[in-house]
Image (cartoon, rainbow over all chains, first blue to last red; front, side, top):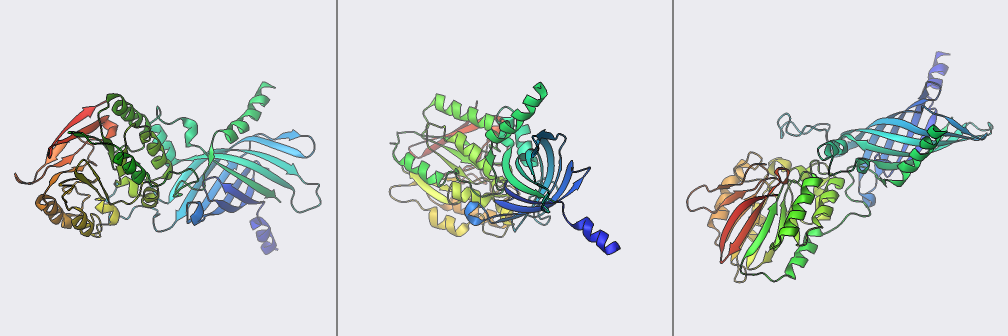
Length: 177
Length: 266
């Protein structure tokens, strides 16, 4: 009985496929909803092939919050502005969690090559199913995000870099179960 | 109702102002420039050198777009320069967007320019980004009877493994000839800096001091007022220039094999 409850808890509420959005040329993820589906915690794995500027392998952990749900007719729900926070980790030889302490003394370079913190906003349109399938709805979303390094460059050069220039786009589809 | 309109406008704003990004660490995107140093050197070859060669030496832009734009404006409005150099630390973090931002600003110069790789530029995928965008890290070009030797001295970024500076490459390329009797070197980290391989300091300085025709070795990295280092009275000048962050660049003038240098604030 306990085993059944455990399995139920780990089955994801969402399956996500995303194009771009700083976590891969394409990435796949699974999400878990909280607070009556207003919040989602999701795990993603993305890949950038060589011919798109890689090879890069990236893992990401995202948390979003959807404060507004606007019904449009019977079949559409619009979540216009949803803050999202995530961390991304890039794997590979050029990307340690820290700079090699045998080569660089403490504080030589202060940032992590592999780990980035991101903040962003998404906009999501949910298309409700008719209730006949396991997929309750399908969401289409667009996301604009920035990261700690872009933000710091901007902060040091506010006159030189327009604030909107530090945001990058991604687009995706979520299947909500 | 007013609140609703704003809410519908935000997604449109999101979608319209922005580009997609696969990763901040991607090596290029569809719009990234390529082979910039080669293109600029070809432009320089179209110019006819005068009796005085005048070079605008800038360095350590560190993704400061506003200061870099002001440097470009100053050089363009002053005139009289044959070409410009950006002597390393183009970026802070070696990221594609940083390289692209500075490159675009320097394209606004009305004279050719070349870039040299700095230590910050070698972070993350920076080596790959730089090499695709600008070209080889060690390269030479000639103008007005002078051979310019641009090379990578960011030893710490190579974990002091002996590959930077590339002494074999330097010995092969720091050679004057009948058409190019004079040599000027550009590299980011000076030989007497802690980020330069200490085991290579002596052979490096010796090579520069014993090769005939070497007028100067130009460095940056230190973010300090211009200084000239000469190990002894017979040595060539090792010139260390300031950072664009301090709104300063260095003018190098060569006439009849005589080199002079002075800083300029803008």
